[in-house]
Length: 393
Image (cartoon, rainbow, N blue to C red; front, side, top):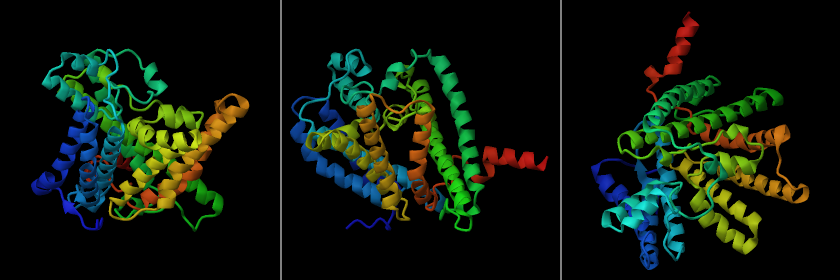
């Protein structure tokens, strides 16, 4: 029986016994799915992948024993869940995945060498958005990406962006923590203050909800863009392989646009293959939409449990499921009116629906220490130091 309260620290032994087997199973499955006639082997490997991922997600502790870093275990659990879902999608698929004509993977495949095949497997395993591979339709925002930048220009722009995002992430964390000292502790604090009248209480909680959402956006983008700088500068990859991860989600005028095009697409492929496609074939398109969002809700709930402080299934799963309900409502609206919500009314609709269901979800995360730490050690937080200087002046 898996007991998530029992954690094993990351060291050479746990890496060799837990992390390495999971990565080996994952990369082997990625290699097999690029080759013909391997579906039996992929399906045979799947139970082992699931077990390794369960052990890593539930047992492994990468916080270094620091309660304030417990959120790192959530990220680890996210990746373990994504690995299982991707391997499940590849096991269900009876053929082999094909590169997009003219892509980096297609060029490699035409070389027909061992190293080219191995490199393609790495590209598929590490490229969560599968930009070089055929499969579920790509978001239309990716089709509007500007032409690839020259390498030096790309590196300058991305490096500057990473620095700005690091400071902004600390500013958002500082803003959140300013509501209550408890938010800066591993045990966290609530977005709801029962001592306030209803209007002030929900105004406070909604403000904190959107600050937390902005923090998630900035943190995710910071990590992605830092990795892209490393990949282009050190690994000499083409900048074209690192298009933007987000596309101004605050400008979305419908939930369909927000989650389908403007938010990141790292989970899109397996959510469609595992959640949306099977449900839509059995129960119709609406069920397919709800199936994809239900998988997202399950992933985020399990991720929060990996922190070791429990979860709130109704709040976490409910938030993502209700996003799916909102998308289904928009589809029904489009059938009746011929178009999705748009303009100022659509923007307010997105803000209202996300805020309505986001309050409890943000509370579930923040009461478990989601705002307890950021990228910088406490004495060296740039925005906090800047604020202290301004208030002393």
